Amino acid sequence: MEKEEIAAYKKAGEIVKEAHELSKKKLKVGTNLFDFSEEIESAIKKKGGFPAFPINLSVNNVAAHYTPSFESEDVLEENAVIKVDIGVHVDGYICDTAETIDFSGKQTEMVNATKEALEAAVKLVKEETELGVIGEKIQKIIKGKGFNPIQNLSGHGVQQYDAHTYPTIPNIANNDTKVLEDDMAIAIEPFATDGQGFVKEGSQAEIFQMEEKKPLRGREARKIIDFIEEEYSTLPFAERWVQRDLEMSEFSRKIGLRELMQKKCIGAFPLLKEDEEKTVTQAETTLLLNEGKVIRLY
Ligand code: CO
Image (cartoon, rainbow, N blue to C red):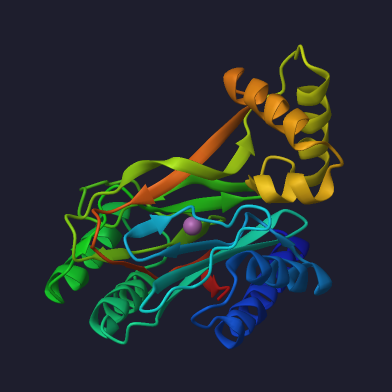
């Protein structure tokens, strides 16, 4: 890895750390999640970073991909178990991280299960470690605490302007014999639950990502895709960002986004949920493998 690249990753790590500190200070029962998201994301920009994806504030049985819509009235509810998943990039180099905050006071064990699984997984990170071995460790720790790892969510590589790339880092023993290699940047993210350990897609989506630029019929769709490419490149974005920053009527925006979805120019990240009444916790950090050394960014 080039020096400049490592420096950018490290700066992203520092900014993300401050963002988590700020969120722990600001998040309280009753906090408006739209205002909170905007505040955290603008703090990231003020420090010279950029959100690598919209802040994810998934609560209780929602494991991932919730971010508030524009001017949403959603507030942090009593007893919420909230996963604060924040990604920051500097020049496209991404640090992807998550912490769980338990406002119920009842899920300390489940919160600790993902924290401990993450720490144990981090200790295994070096060249030649098999991916399946990391998953096996995560599974063993989470199971040992009496919970299930979520089998269809996994860690992942990151690359410049690519938030989810090879390798896939499992949260279960899947016997994958592919190995970690020098020059990789990887995010490890164990999820634990008292549910079955399998998430399903919900119908709601607030987060999208450019897939491919194609010829478009509508003026609205063309305007939006040009804006997306310019502002977010190939990284995930929130509809609320488009609404906030691109001057366009709600009607035009809906028409444009619909065409972009239909033509698969953009893809959606629907909410990912465990069963109702169940709880999910998550812990995540990003690491670099560089010339025999492991650099933990967060
Ligand atoms: Co991640």
